[in-house]
Length: 238
Image (cartoon, rainbow, N blue to C red; front, top):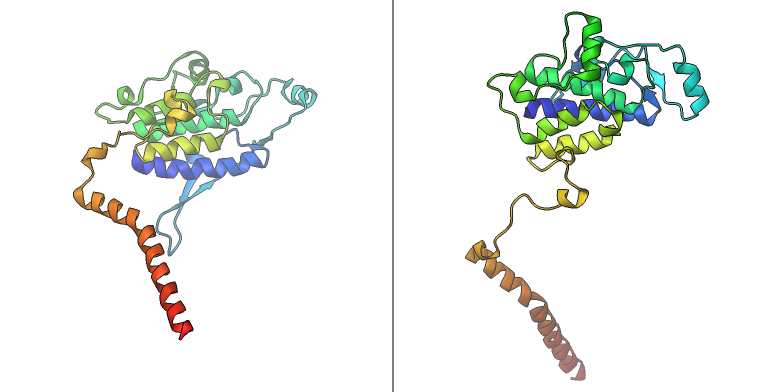
C-alpha cells in the first residue's frame, strides 16, 4: 500500500499540472502510466502518456453543448467514469474516477468493474457499487484511510469525488503518514487535530528540566547584561 501511495502521489501531481493547464486526459489507465528510471535516480519517475483523446476544459456552456451534443464516448471501458459512459460532460473529476479505477486495480490485482462485455462493464460503472478493497483482494490488509480515498474517487456523482488532484494529493500524503483523511468525512478542523492526545504528565524528567532551564534563560541573560553595563561604567569612570 505504501509503495502504491508513493507512485500515485506522483501521478496525481502530474495530472494536476495538466488540469491547471485546462487539459482533461480522459483515458487514465495502467498502460498509460510509465515508470522511467534513469541513471542516478533513486526511484523511478512517473510519465503519463497517450494524450490522444484529451479535451480542453471549457467554461462557456454553449461551447460545451456543441462539443457534447453528438454524445461522443471516448476512453477505455474498464476505467471510464459514469459520465463518460453516457457521453456526458467530462471534467477534471472524470480523471479522478479513472485514476481511482487504476489505483483499485494496482491494490487488488483487478479493476473495480468487469462485465461479460464492454456494454456490461459500462453499465456497472453507471449503477454498481465497487467492492471494498479488502473484499476484492482476499487476505489484503488495507487501512481505513485508503479504503475511504478509493471510495471517494469512485463516487458515481462527480460532485461527490475529489474536485481537484490537489485535494487527492493531500489525502494520499496524509494516508501515507498514517493520518486522518478528508475522504473519511472529517471537516478541515478535525483534520488538524492530533491523532493521539499528549499527556503532559507523561513528559520525561529530562524534558521537564529542559523546560525549566529555558524559562530562566531570559532573566539570566538580562542579569548578566546589567552586570556587564555596570563593569563598563566603572572602568569608564576611572
